[in-house]
Amino acid sequence: MAKAELAKSVLFAPFGGVVADVFIEEGEWTAPSPPALPIPPVLDLIDSRSIYISAPMDEVDSARIREDQTARVTVDSHPGRHFPSHVVKVAPYVLDRLEQNRTIEIEIEIDDEALAKTLLPGTSADAEVILSAREDVPRIPTAALLEGGKVLVLEGGRLVERGVTLGLRNWDFTEVKDGLAPDARVVVSLDRPEIKAGARAREANTGAR
Image 1 (cartoon, rainbow, N blue to C red):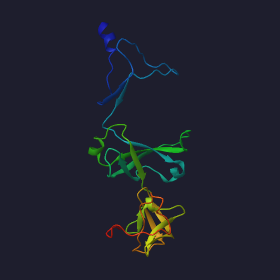
Image 2: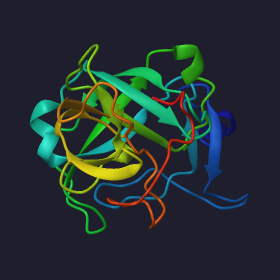
Image 3: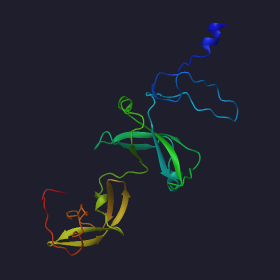
Image 4: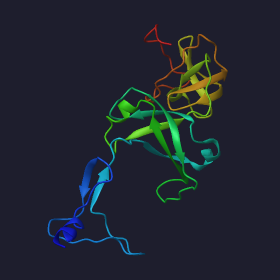
C-alpha cells in the first residue's frame, strides 16, 4: 500500500523537455483539477523538439492565408538572416483584444529543423506569409516611399517628387510598375528634415543602386 501511495506522488513527463518554471514549493500539496475548478499547473514543461512561430495576422488577410503556404521568418537573435518556412496551422476564429486589432492566430514552422531546434522558446520573431511573388521586376526599398505612393529622385542636382505605380510589397522592398526610369536615382534615406522636394543634393556613392 505504501508503494502504491508513493507511486501516486510521482509525476512523469510525457516527453523530454526543458522545465521553464515551477509553480509549487517543497511541502505544498496539489491535486488534479476537479470539473469547472481549474488548479494552477505544477510546472511549465517545454518540448524543445517542437519549435514553431505563433503570429497574429490581420483579419483582413484571413481569407488568403491557408496551411502549407510558404512563409519567411526573421529572428532577433539572428539579425540580417531570413529563414524559409511554411504555415502549419490557421486558427478557425478571430481574436478580439483591446490592445490590438482583430487578428487571426497562425503557426509557422521553419523548414530547417536543425536550425529550429537551436532557437530558444520565447524568442522574438517576425513572420511573413508569401501570398504572391514576382521575378525580375523593378523594386525599391519600402523605406524610400513617401505618403501617397511617391518617391524622391535626384535630377539635375535637386530632389524631385515622382509618383509611382506600386505592385507587391513587404517590409523590405516594393515593386514599381510604372513611374521610374531604369536609371533613376531614388533617395532611400528620409530620416532628415532637409531631405525634401526642391532641396539641392548630390549622389554620395556613385556605385549605389
